[in-house]
Length: 123
Image (cartoon, rainbow, N blue to C red; front, side, top):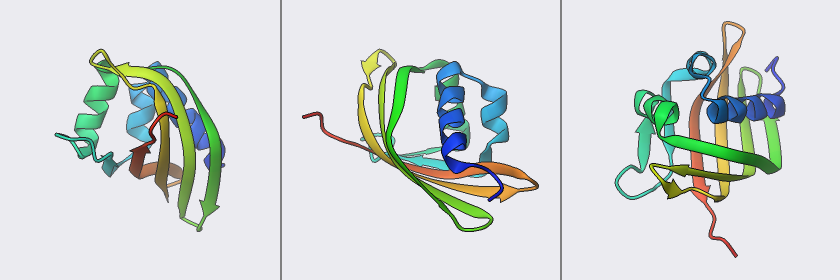
């Protein structure tokens, strides 16, 4: 990939935090899905994820505690341990997650096509 996957991952989460929907729409593939395994919504499609991000999901602060970027040419995989302080619909979402992101380069632009996030229990 011609993009720095670690920097792209950080920029993506800044856009989520700051609700930069235009940037997010440009950098999400049409086939984007978020898989969390949460009861009632184990997989969210692109449109639903954008709607939630626009109004219901709040990130107060975040950090990547570990991040490994694997470049496979037109495809990149980012495996990370991510921590955030935030909420959704008033329910706390302050915890660490193991995440795997798959990025694809299309017409010179990197697009996130799938994310799998597994919440980790707090010690």
